[in-house]
Length: 264
Image (cartoon, rainbow, N blue to C red; front, side, top):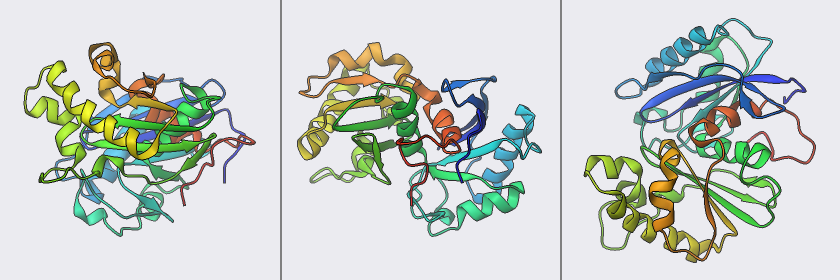
C-alpha cells in the first residue's frame, strides 16, 4: 500500500540502462546521485534482477526495507505480470514480474510500466501538474513509451509507440525512436521529420491538450522540438530522464486526489 513516507527509492529499468535514486517525495527531487548500470545483454529476468541489486547496493539501500521501493519496467504491466517485451527478453511475456522482484529482493515493491510512472512524476511534480484535459507523455529512447493522463488520472498501459505505419514493416518506435536516429545517423532535422509524422498521427487520433516529451533525448529538447509544427503544445518533461526514477518512487506515496499509484 502507498504510505505517508517522505522519501523512497525509484528504479527505472530501460532497454539500454537501469537507473536508480533516492527521491524526496514532497519535492519530487533526487536526494542521492543517480546510479546507473547497463541493461544486461538479452535482458533476461535473472540478469536484470542482478543489475537491480547492483544499483540498490550502490545506493546503500539494498537492505533498508523501511524505505519504499518502486520499480518501473518497459512493458505492459497488469496485476503484477508483464504482458509484453519490446526491448527485453521474450521471457518477460506473461511473467509474474512483480513477485519475481519481490522474492529476489526480499521485500515488497511497487511495480508499473516505465512510461506510466514518468507520467505520474510529471503530473505530481512537473509539466502536467494542474493541467486539465488530455495529456500525452511520450518517452523517446530505445523505444517510444507513452502515458495517457486525463484530468490528472492515469489511463494505464497505452502503447502508442507501437502504432503501425501503413505499408511499412516497422512500427512507430522502429521508425521514430531516438534509437532510430542514432542507428541511422540522422540529423536533428531528419529525425524531426519522422517525429512530425508520429505526433501528427497521435494528435489526429486523440486530440490532446498537451504533449510532454521525456526520455534521455529530452535534455536536447532545444535541438528538435522547435522543428515540429503541431496544433497541440509540446514541451519537454520537467524531470527529463529522471522522470522514471521519480515516478517509480512516487508510487509509494499516498496523495489524496492524485494519480493512482497502481496500474492494474
